[in-house]
Length: 415
Image (cartoon, rainbow, N blue to C red; front, side):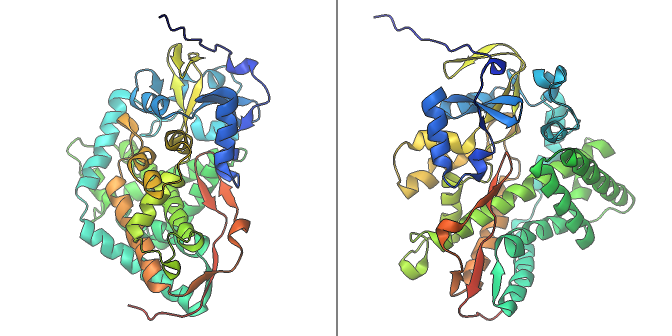
């Protein structure tokens, strides 16, 4: 018997009535958005990065892994993006400001990427996880002491957004003022509104350049100094790229992971000890990876040659967005088994191939301690709004509850 496969070959520019990608991170029911996209288009769906800027969103597990692992066909370097090359996307626009070509670990491939990746991998290899956990506990204690004294808080802005940046400040050698500035830059980068994204990236690079110069002159016991001491003798630009990628991407997605785990504890009876739940902080974080991963979507790849993906013709120069949550949903199917959600599918959030997340170990330590300390210290915490009223504030790449307002019914003493 002969099986005939039909390949759909419409070009992106010829398709209309496309769903904005931002709906996958801001919708109250993202599963419905994915279901609608998949029903209409299949496992590779056209979406809009911003008005007039279409891309393909990968919604299938098999297709996702193909894109992530095949650097020779799906490149990170946006110089291969047709819409940027022909002027449709301006480098100073919202999406253009984020995805414009630059010499950084997040934006390059091949030999250059492998060199920059070694700087980060080797620096992280030397991290003392016990020391890191102690640093996280200290910063959590500072934040939680203040919240408990006040009796109420927004766990997104008062805790989840504060702790990762404070921890990374210590890891890389940033002082408190520089940390606050970095957080502001990171938020503007991920919002990608108008030219603010590009301007924020420039401000972030200037801040990190100052840090590199300081550590060149006076090395210290931090990750920035470890990168500068690497045997490959990195240039200042190399070091800036390594530090920048980790601070900008790591902090934003760490915030999302911690926040989504806390949301589960506050809104889902399976995680609430008062309702008989017995899942640990680690269990909760694992479930969050499968159900609401920190990276809902990851940065686009740009196709180097005409190819076929998920039964659809993809043309050289097209942008292809790996949909982490969409692919997880496709693999889960109709099951609501919490362990299926949090088990083998959770690895997707860390990526695969050359651009897989290099910070999995330290990111896990930070998240586990931050969530564990919050659960230990915040006894009797109650959400002060109905769970169904919580709304996400999203970028193209991640989704975070806008707020988690809580009241403490009983205050636990400090450590």
